[in-house]
Amino acid sequence: MKKLFLLLTISTFIFCGCSDDDKDNGPKTYVLNLPSYETHTLDLGDVENPIDTWSSSYEDQGTTYTTNYFQTLLTDNSKIFEFDCISSDSYGFGSDGFAFTNCTINDCPDFSVYDYRAIPKKGVSSNTYVVVGAAGYKVGSNSDKEVSIRFKDNENPNKTEDYQVKGLYVTNCVYAYKSMKEGSSIFSGLDKFEANDSFKLKIHNFDKTKMVECDLAEGTNILTTWKWVDLTALGETNGLKFTMISTKVNDWGPMTPTYFCLDGITLIED
Image (cartoon, rainbow, N blue to C red; front, side):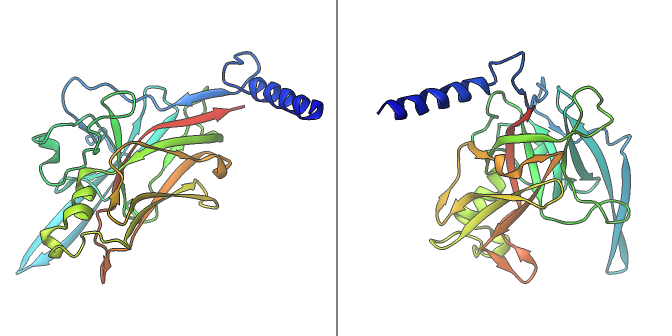
């Protein structure tokens, strides 16, 4: 009994010694700090000055249609988190990349085509949260880039830095939720989830050598709240990448819209 009490005492001391409250010697914690917008906004970055642009074209009945794409960078208020944002002049927010938004109402003009709103209608600690498209297409003028979140050096924003990722919050967007809950007309309702279906999010370290899996839907149990995902298994990394897997697929790929929302990424620096 005395040995058990001694072990518990030592364990408690070790735990307290490594807590965030030890400001002098303990690890530093950085939490995603998103902008507060005065109006309902879908922030796609500075598309007037993108870091990369490219185009794709197709012909239909003798007419050529061209879509121009833009890659911009979004950063949170702390300047530690850097997000790739991909948008186009034809469709707005793209199928791969990140956007910041505080849109919570049905008639938000930025969601006139697809409803990327988070089901909870706000972020974890504020109205703003991150919309994520994770179809897995390569992007860029040479089609050789994977969109990602990069972690920047706290003292030098021109450099990336390795951190221990404590975790983040995720939830479904309205677009994906409606597809799974009700089915959509584009797939004649075949995308509606049944008991054996699933929608999974895979969160990778930057080099994609480690991965944590999270369920966004299991059968007809579809996530509608913010869910904390522990990412300590990823070890130290200088960024994150995402892929999504649905059991509802056809010959062209997943019928479930490959979008979700995230917030509250928390990093630990020793």
